[in-house]
Image (cartoon, rainbow, N blue to C red; front, side):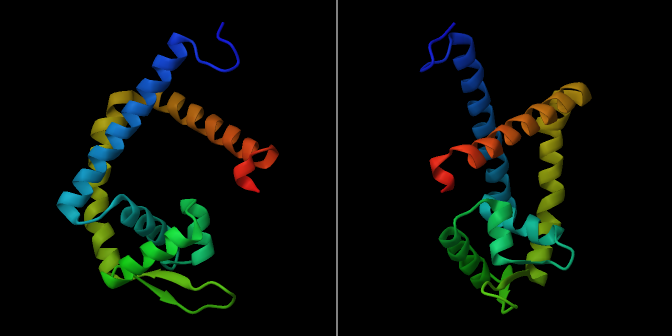
Length: 159
């Protein structure tokens, strides 16, 4: 049994395998998005969230919450996307503007999403199969819940 400060060899190997797989998968998918569609991972994340919003808009504070980005990072990235015509800001009630997907942004996500989904299917869904996919979902939900509990309890990053 490892001490409280370290991981056993099996635990370390499992952790490293997960980290390496996640990085490799993410980098591979992002490379395709950039090369084929001119979108960064951040562009794609924002466009997905806006396109899934019923009216193609979210308050900036809501977009920050769903992306879990700092306010300044979100503001800077939205500014870059505005310059490219993918989104626009609109004044709204309250302190924060709405971030709205443009026709160009809708076209970008409409062309990129099917290719990205095919790659996710090929490199993740089909590799795992239905049973392991269900297990992966359960594990991911459990880990997300543990992180949220940590944030609510004693995480110094949450204050």
